Figure 1 (tube, rainbow, N blue to C red):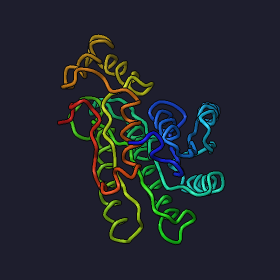
Figure 2 (figure 1 turned 180 degrees about the vertical axis):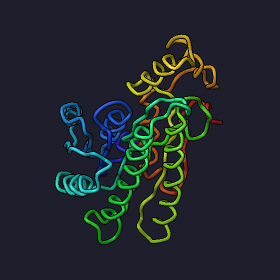
Figure 3 (figure 1 turned 60 degrees about the vertical axis):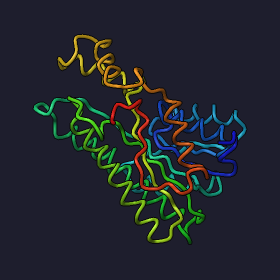
Figure 4 (figure 1 turned 90 degrees about the vertical axis):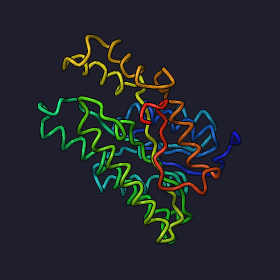
Length: 267
């Protein structure tokens, strides 16, 4: 792809303050897109937006709890006002709470469902309304939902998280079908990242040790690497590059897919 393959495009990235979201936001900006970061981490999110501004693209930050429909309305309105519309949504915000099935707490299960499932579908709802003909942006676009390799493998201690990411995959495909059939001009795809040494990934490794599934963090990480044909963990840049591709014209005939970026772990 060309270095500025997204020149003139405008994106909203949820959970964009740090980790995978911040990496995707930066990669979109480096490819020429204007970027709005939505997150509950106000200070970190504003700092990330400031870093992106140094790349010479229009950017901004908006407080966004993805579980709240009213906050989505405000975030999409702010994105349209700041960027002049938007035609890319990266549904990245998500949480993982580690637990054996025998020990799962109902409130933790509900929280993961609320953020990972409800938050994702609300993002698609408001993106469709903005991007479809007659919407505030009205020129079509691309949605990329961040699922997980956990949606494709049976990994102990993350049953509910795996279920929520499987739901992201299913919702992606239904949304892609609806968008196509209704003439929205919006492509919808998802990515299955492998384990990445972000704050969330390292927390999972520590949690696996705490519940007795590995003797130490190195062993926990090593077990993941052992299951990965390419023999290493993913990097945030790997996911960011995939997101840029799915948003670009090079992917203009791709919709309704789940793209593994997991080193082969989920094959």
